[in-house]
Amino acid sequence: MSGRLIRKGSTVSYITFENVTKEYRTGGERVLAANQVNFEIEKGELCVVLGPSGAGKTTILNLLGGMDRATSGKITVGGKEVTAMRGKELTEYRRLDVGFVFQFYNLMPNLTALENVELARQVCPNALDPVEVMRQVGLGERMNNFPAQLSGGEQQRVSIARALCKNPALLLCDEPTGALDSKTGLQVLSLLKDVSEKYQTTVAIITHNAAIAPLARRVIRVRNGQIESVTLNDHPASVEEIAW
Image (cartoon, rainbow, N blue to C red):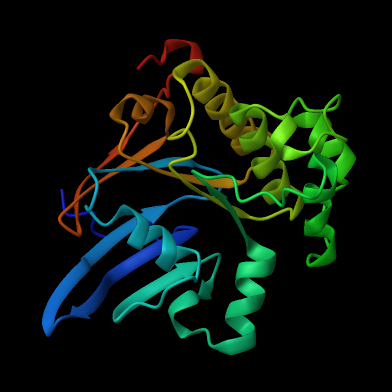
């Protein structure tokens, strides 16, 4: 399946990639990290972008998050053309519309868990209450602990809480369970699924772990910089059904 963009009548999906290409030049050679990529994601969906290392998954995430620029093609998010943004407009998009969760938690070691989450309030005018968000991710009793005093799973939940506190419409997660054991990873996945359902946040999880795919409403498989297939799950699995 090519991942061709499908318009339902006059309605366009929340996220669309249309013939998106990202080209790098290394040592005089042309490398296509993304090659004529087409797909769509609906508002409030939990989507998994799946593929092996080097397939182009992170390139897609960086393009979607406005952290990298497409060589050609068009990316639209919520009616905004990301590929047309420049300067301040692009900065505002990253600051207000998108939350980022990475494999390595990128917490400030000299700040408490709560203070790490409160950073979102300094950049986002519509930020959620940091204390309430910490409680929602199950860390109400750990707010005053420093990152070094938290487990890996707890640190990842702080990272998710920090992203959520921005109140973003789009949450991008790059291998969010990659540094965790399976039990803790499932707890993090359960939290991300809850976020999608409770807040109607569009959640995109980039991963090489095929066991995660059944959780998603939409699974986009990437190989060699191209979309290999797009699959819709009418009945996504519960976290309890997942094992790896």
